[in-house]
Image (cartoon, rainbow, N blue to C red):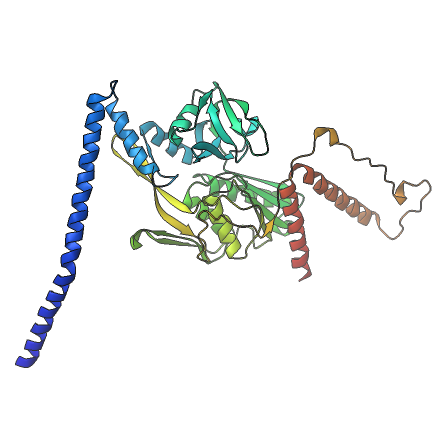
Length: 443
């Protein structure tokens, strides 16, 4: 018994010595790191004091510190930034789906302000601002070298006031000006309509209202169609959707899935990681689904497209999405200010990150520019059919009801053809959906 206790004691002592040998250098490293951090903070204090006391003009000390904090955050990535109290309040209002401004989602690229997407039915969208445009000047003041928050502040102003932005657009030789009247932006995040027997769901952003708007819209259009059996399929339009709340992206994805993972997030620490799964209940009853995306589809919209694509629940059509695969956490600070800090990356159900890569559509379809107004109405090409000939025989193999049904189908096809001139990607999606419907009914 004495030998056993001795062996246990020696084992404990050896374990202590082994631990001490390893933790000694670690403690030293941590001490050195802490020392270095405080030295750099002393350096910051030294620079701040020299600016405060020796700069050619008086400086606003509060603004100077805020600029230093914002510089620290923006050096991390394009989506982390500091917000003063007014900006923080504005951001929270925006996530509720109502805010003031032009109606554009912007980012920064090569020092310039770049439009991610204009928001539907806003002054910017109506004035012709497009995804991918670079805003080089605001009321004649160059944006090059400005922080993104400063540029956004410059574009804000009283409702009804005029602003002139200078645009550089790919494919256009010279910069040009667009005049916009600022307005109160009220965004209905999801609009649902029916065309023929297809329900089209347009989701322009992920605010607190998105899932509610979508669910109510789907139910209303199904009722209008005469029940789900009368609906052939659904189109989810996520083009130029800049994203928004992660929770809403999960709810929208869940609306079309019965089970399985929707998205996982992985942070720096294991406790910051999370996994969201679908719950039973598909609002579309498993009907064929097509998702539309383009280069203006970012963040939360990419989560939805990626989840539905990985689960083979939808055919994704359009062009490669924006490629923002990071998650930002909003953190309130003292005096009403706050920071937006990138805290995690997100991954689709198959484990892929879309950061800087985007979601690649199953079928790549470039958008065609609308035809000129002069070409509209040029339907009479001179072509004649048998039915146009005087005295042609009638078709005696069809009943009157069958003839009416055939005429309705022809009108629907003509409407679809006309849509190709207005929105080629949506028209293509409807054609694909029709093919999926035919295949499923054959099975």
